[in-house]
Image 1 (cartoon, each protein chain N blue to C red):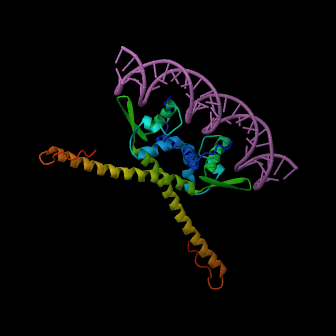
Image 2 (image 1 turned 45 degrees about the horizontal axis):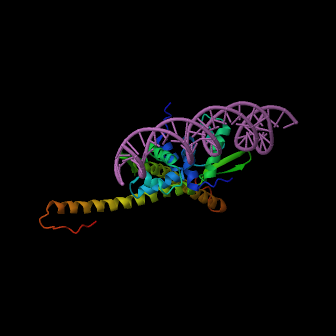
Image 3 (image 1 turned 180 degrees about the vertical axis):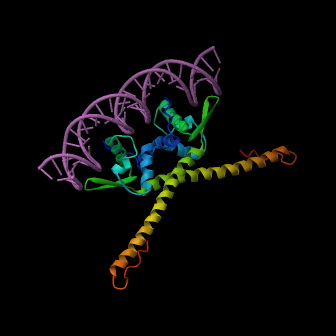
Length: 127
Length: 127
DNA sequence: CATATAGTTAGCTCCATGGCTAACCAATTA
DNA sequence: TAATTGGTTAGCCATGGAGCTAACTATATG
């Protein structure tokens, strides 16, 4: 019970749907009612509401009802959280690239050394 | 036939699964064979291979078989593409925040003006 | 009060996803 | 050549996600 999806799971799953990405994009430009949000989409309201719920469950969107109209707004923390994930991966990736570059440089030196065995007697395994 | 998922759909869907995120994180640190990748997971190989396929279909990962071992590596373009999406949203969001701030400033001025109605006769019903 | 508006709830399909087992290549290694 | 290893294919099952309609609630509005 209570499947305890990780927050990132929910955020990425929410963003995997084009309708929901469109909603997020729309909300980036400012808050809106459910009706306003739903208007551009050729979809029954209950179906559309499900998307809203998914977005709320993921923490990307929050909403509040006053009278009979529910107003939705972006809660940017979740978006930033997901963006962070990418930046972390990129950091690791780039660190690796640096190491790889260093490795290639080392290879090049060793190749060069191998190509002229005349002078370089042993080059002292300069690891 | 050929459901024509958008690239972003596939990337986010791929990243919505913790197993697949773990694979991506692992591959950020360098390429690996299917077996090496699968090892930490308590999962039958065929199930695991499905995850690899999803990652390949999304463009996040590419692989190549030589002999009987398939080596997988990250293809960072897709990752960067998804990261870009966040940055675009954030740009719009921040632009809006700026506008909102300007709006609040304007409100403040008007409030201040309203508080001293001595001079401001009608302020010209500025919508 | 009557009606229209804005969401909501309930409940149904259909298909994609994530997992499994069993059986099957195809390279290595003994 | 026989056995092992590393992946792959095929096919099954349970769950969940995305869509629908119909019927309902609650707030405005006439």
